[in-house]
Structure formats: structure tokens, C-alpha cells
Image 1 (cartoon, helix red, strand yellow):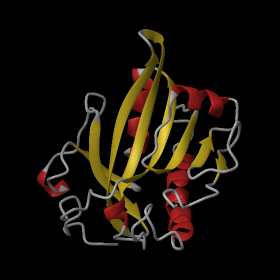
Image 2 (image 1 turned 90 degrees about the horizontal axis):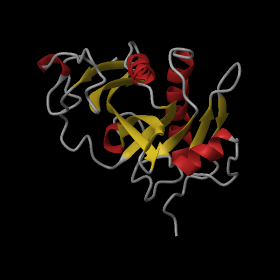
Image 3 (image 1 turned 30 degrees about the horizontal axis):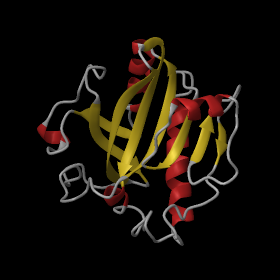
Length: 209
């Protein structure tokens, strides 16, 4: 395990390069479920934090207690005994002005430059496709392990794992119906009745010509 005093959040350019992330649709708007999801995600030993700022190390700031008012939080992920910078943010989408159809979303992300501290990510997703299957499988499994360890702590309707992910309302509808493309750059996670349903990515050359 790396030293707890070694810089992590403040390493130069460590937040650059885009994000590799778990992007969850939590379901219909519920502050209680968003709070439960944040509490579950930011739980030791897999994560350290959360903190309000990324320009200070954990030793220089207090852990954020009430996570709901903070749209964006930062911290440290423990992957393969390496401390990597990470963050979460929440979002809400709704159809027109109809708040009764609003959906909550939560993202847990790892910046690509930060991932390079533990994996040979190269210039992914603009290149370095050969090494992508191995490190993506390892990081995907870390996200899945986190979800499995907190199963039942909060509800979610579906999720995607990959580079700079998002979900539109129409894409959530397809996930609910289990309409999953066989040609996909992102992995797909569904809650399942007894255990998570995992559909790994089938491609890695996101920006290949």
C-alpha cells in the first residue's frame, strides 16, 4: 500500500485526460436514495473521503459529512494497493418541466491520468487499444465489487462503465427493457433479482478510424 502521506489529489495534471467511470441511473428522484447511494459509495476500505476540494490533500481538509448539498465530491480510490484520485457527482434529468418523471444519476469516476499511476492506459481512448482489455477488465471488476459490496444499500435501475459515460432518458428506457447492443464500447450493469447482471464491453477502439 502506498504511503498515506504521499501526494495523490495534488499530483500535477492528475485530473486530466477525461474520466473512466461508473455512471448509475438511481431511478425516480429521491433525496433519500441519492443520500444512501453516496453513503454506500464513499465507504471504506475501497474509497477514502469524500472531500470538498481536489486542490488539497486529505490531510489538509475535513471529510464531508452531509454529502447531499455537494454536487461534486473528491477522494481516493484504493485499487491494487495504489491510491488513485477519484470523484463523484450527481445529476437529475426530467422530461420538459414534469418533475414527476425526473430521474437521479450518480457517477463515480477515475481520471485517466490518475489511472496511469496503476495501469498502462497509454493514450486511451485515442490509442493504446492493445492494453485496454486487461486494465479495463480490472477496473470494471473493481466497480462491480463496490456495487456488490453495497447491494441493498440503495436502488438503481441500470449503469454503464466506460470512458466519459452518460445516460439519456431514452437510453434508460432501453436498459429497463434489457435492450443491450451487442456492439458496445461501454459495459452495462443491471441490478438483477439475486445478483448483478454484467454485460462487458465488446469493443475498445472508441475513436478508431
